[in-house]
Image 1: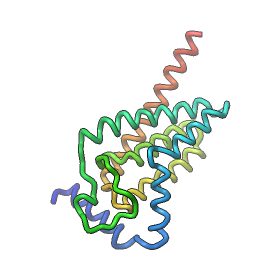
Image 2 (image 1 turned 180 degrees about the vertical axis):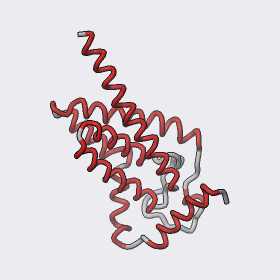
Image 3 (image 1 turned 90 degrees about the vertical axis):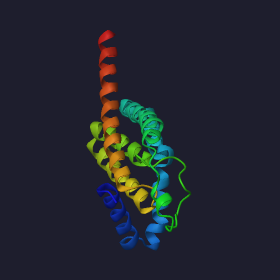
Image 4 (image 1 turned 60 degrees about the vertical axis):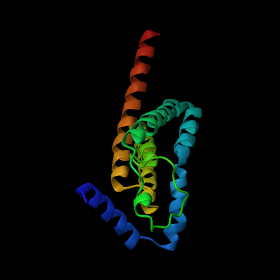
Length: 181
């Protein structure tokens, strides 16, 4: 077993052997579901978009999520085509329906950290809370045995990068539009 596989397996086994309990078995599917199709982040982006004070904030979140879909789900997942942990370790009972796409990077984690990075840029308090929720969603994916730890790490890195890029893009375009008026 290579070092990455060994790391991934040892972390997942540690979680399965030491952290599972009835409370987490009930809570983790709910936390994970918040990230399904970036649902919670889309809602937050739309709410901010509707508030005059936070309109740019909302635009940035939604652009970051679109970029996550394009870069992560349509680009990186098929490129790496990584199988999920439950496909390798078939004795684990899943608490949620089997995801149908590839494992790397974690889409839930990627969109969560992209949104959190955008929020942190504009408001440290919102960003900090978003980072906590993003971390909970990321951990839930490990707990539920649908991602390897390196999928989560990849999702954090790619998502944060996309969030930063979305802010840069919107601020650069906004500056150019402002100068042309």
